[in-house]
Image (cartoon, rainbow, N blue to C red):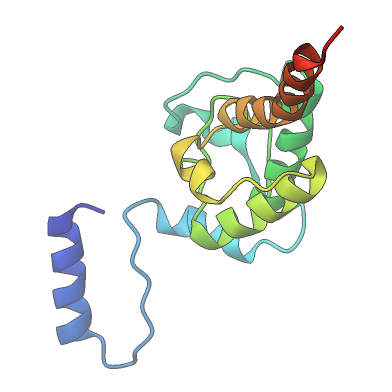
Length: 151
């Protein structure tokens, strides 16, 4: 949200919301509600149906890391046919789903990526690159130590 949108939302909440129950959304609220409340695959969204709303063109996963991340995204978002350049947030992702998603990603890949990395790299391809780099770091460190050993 922009600062102006935030101020407007606050003013509306403060003056027009006696119940105390609010939802603030700048995107497609019915689509997000569907994602939040979908309990079965039949209720979930098929990304192919809403592909025209996305800024990215569909690109299928190209390696095992991307395929594993795609399965996690499908599970968390309740969507199918997610491309590696689709933004988590354009697909209806939000901070609570981001926490669930990153917990599953970290468990699957035995890594400690902070949730901030998803906000910096909100695509399957972006996360896959970070995971590949994190998997390579220990190998690079071992090679560096081995190179320092005397002959």
